[in-house]
Figure 1 (cartoon, rainbow, N blue to C red):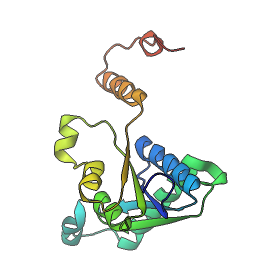
Figure 2 (cartoon, one colour; figure 1 turned 60 degrees about the horizontal axis):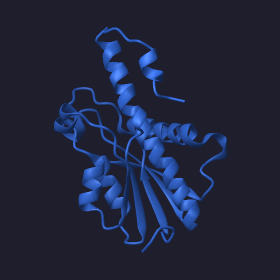
Figure 3 (cartoon, helix red, strand yellow; figure 1 turned 90 degrees about the vertical axis):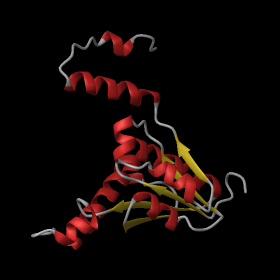
Length: 178
């Protein structure tokens, strides 16, 4: 099945720059193929379900779910503004890990799953499993994993330098740019 032949385009959002780029690309793919867009935001209680269940004063699950819904709406607004994605869409707030939620939502062979594959350092890879890798390994449908913008790595470098209070020359940021 080639591009544009999808019945549904499923995309995961978190509000990160990579997920917003994936959301915009998913909307483009849905428009191109006259497909429905499913926008998924996965959430888990802070510390996971086990920690939440053992907490002395856990946050109400309804409040956590409502917060996830607000983050989903904020991501849609950031990506498209008032105009919306320009295709029929549904927003889904799913309790669980992001990779599993996306794979379980994109459960048809004629779905297209779109994910952002951001830059990840060694520490981040060790502590947090990659959603894109999980989806690529477990999905029953084609997966489109978008690489991060080349500017993302430069921005991360600037943030590190600022965080460490190292000198920063603004000319470094514009050299070689039109």
